[in-house]
View 1 (cartoon, rainbow, N blue to C red):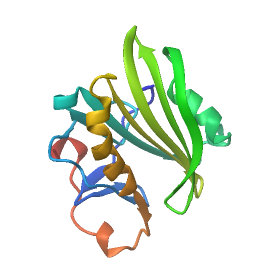
View 2 (view 1 turned 30 degrees about the vertical axis):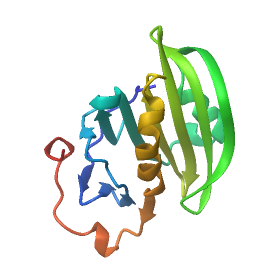
View 3 (view 1 turned 45 degrees about the vertical axis):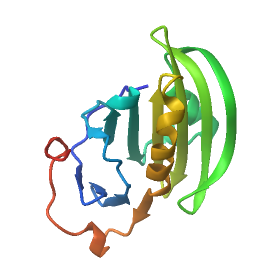
View 4 (view 1 turned 60 degrees about the horizontal axis):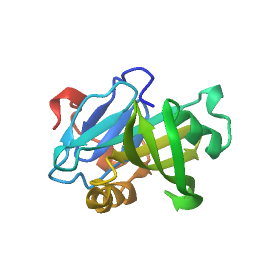
Length: 171
């Protein structure tokens, strides 16, 4: 699920900047710590709940010209014993996203997932929350607030201006 390459993006004042793309995120809960994860533009660890949140956006890749359900399947490759609680289309930043709730094993360890996949303006947005099933419900509300705060911004937006800080320099 975490395959890919590291990104040279920046994150400051709740805005992810990646080339000309600007994405507002948040709010980032106080208990989340920013971590570097290969294949994610933003990643946070919630140690209190043994959970992680990953956000990635990629644009203009031919492989992403697939239905949302297929793009979701690509995210959960490597998991086993999948038990889909629900999979449905939901509104997300003015478009439709596939929201998938499931339990699966990752490297033999039971985990619970909440996954959003959206296509917008030649880009694919993935947002994932994963935690052990016993802790998942405690972190879900924080994840929902984070997801509900995601929105694309115009490149010229005043919210997108300011000094850039490399990912490793922002907690």
